[in-house]
Image (cartoon, rainbow, N blue to C red; front, top):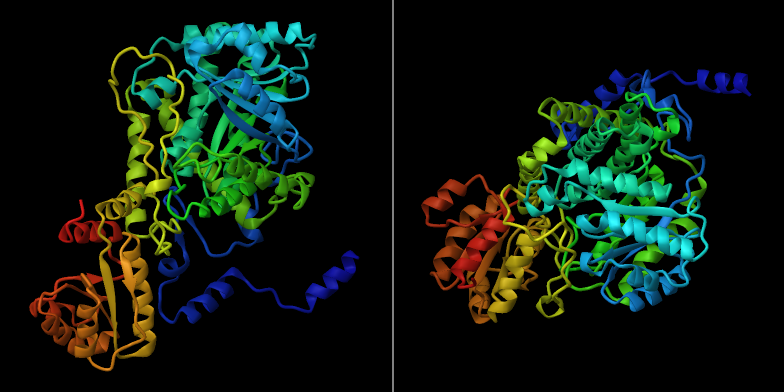
Amino acid sequence: MAEQKEKLFSEFAPVSTEDWVAKITADLKGVPFEKKLVWKTGEGFNVNPFYRLEDIEGLKTTESLPGEFPYVRGTKKDNDWKVRQNIEVCCFKAANEKALDILNKGVTALGFVIKGDDVNKENIATLLEGICPQAVELNFNTCLCKAEALIGILAEVFQSKGADLEKCYGSVNYDPFKKPLIKGKENQNWVESAAAVLKAGAALPKYRVLAVNAFNLNNAGAFITQELGYALAWGNELLAKLTEAGFTVDEVAKNIKFNFGISSNYFMEIAKFRAARWLWAEIVKAYAPACDCACKMHVHAQTSEWNMTIFDAHVNLLRSQTEAMSAAIAGVDSITVRPFDKTYQTPDDFSERIARNQQLLLKEESHFDKVVDPSAGSYYVEVLTNSLADVAWKLFLDVEEKGGFAALANAGEIQKAVNASNEARHKNVATRREILLGSNQYPNFTEVAAEKIKETASGCCGGGHCGEATITALDFSRGASEFEALRLATEKSGKTPKVFMLTIGNLAMRLARSQFSANFFACAGYKIIDNLGFETVEAGVEAAVKAGAEVVVLCSSDDEYATFAPEAFKALAGRAEFVVAGAPACMEDLKAAGIEQFINVKSNVLETLKAFNAKLGIN
């Protein structure tokens, strides 16, 4: 067979990378290869349009097998993962009934969010009635000050059920950095309380009681390399300080659970989880654990909130589906898919059912759980894994050199860096460099959303009510939030400005520009009046005025604007806002004639629409 393959390939002359680049450059007809086809990711490295075998030669990620150190290909030799659904516990009996119900609908891991004041043995016993702690992964999230007590209560309740504590598995989400990151309050004396939680956790050997909640960075708009680099520094802070406090590295490492977010950057997220396991294994190994199994990263992944939207909310299903696919292919231990309606209401039974089924489809119909690390060997994914690892590792080292994760979090430096990324991404959304379908591009023209937005229940206190914020906290404003505020302002104003497409001249250009302009103004909730075309400028202006248009957009070709634009501007005579679609060469001449408003692919869509809202009296 080898001889046959060799003979087959000998029939074809090899094509070098240089030959490929030469051909691509020729096809680009003078446009620079780097400018046109190289993706500048914002993650600290660029991505080429193609990769070849030579690009992965010498990479360490291709050398190991699944279940083997450094675990880049997974910590286990299968790809099964837990399907997790979280329950906000208000009534313990109702939460128990819901848990029992969804356990019969495909859920294999439960997450309970419990208010600190409600943590007592009676409530926990009610919550877990009929649930076997040896058969279901149980995860608990409560106030920091109650975590130690909760662990003890769980051990008592499990014993009262006759359960073997050695076989009960799950987690208690004790995150000492929740206060500085989320609340903006320093937590300088966290080691003592974390040590107490870790000591209490010995009663539940298969429970992980220390949390690295990197998903908060994801939800705050962090770049993938930031989420990964800071997560590693976060975990290392727990290792360093708790081993100094007298625990072994094995005790600490085996009690840490990493909770990552998943963005819609499909291949990059696959690479992130592979790089995360690899780098974490190397970090733990440096502490000389008794067993390599301590180097295994335990990962729970949950779909992002940053890119979820209120308008066209069913698109959230598409986002979360690709996100869940990334995590599943990458071999995480459990996944939570956020219901599509979470941005505007407490998720209902329908949205929760769909969220569960999104994972079940990946298992039962797509069989993602049957193949371990299917992306391994892909030139693209292997290079991405190494590129992400390089940038994240540099960030990790930078954090360590500056005093470690705790010091930077308590000084607000981590938060400032992530918030700067959030701001940069918001600018990208405003200028459509980053697309949020249905919000800043291709909106549903007729959708209204104000009535469907309902107040959602507030979460747990997260570590006490003492004092005001003293440091910068993470900014959780979603990517679409400014566009949503803009459109809701239009909706609540009682006005629906009419935007009239004055289409004239070159057929292809006027259609393309009217479509662009319609999508542009619909992002603010304006009513779009499109047209097939007018024979004369005067006819178009007359039709626009008759239709009661507040905005008239001239849609034609660059060559024709020199004539049509001044004519239309003069004919309209200030009876509506006048806009030219495009950036014609004659723009300066048109500006000299008094035409000031142009929209094109380089426009800041958000700022432009804010300006129009102000002109049209919408606050």
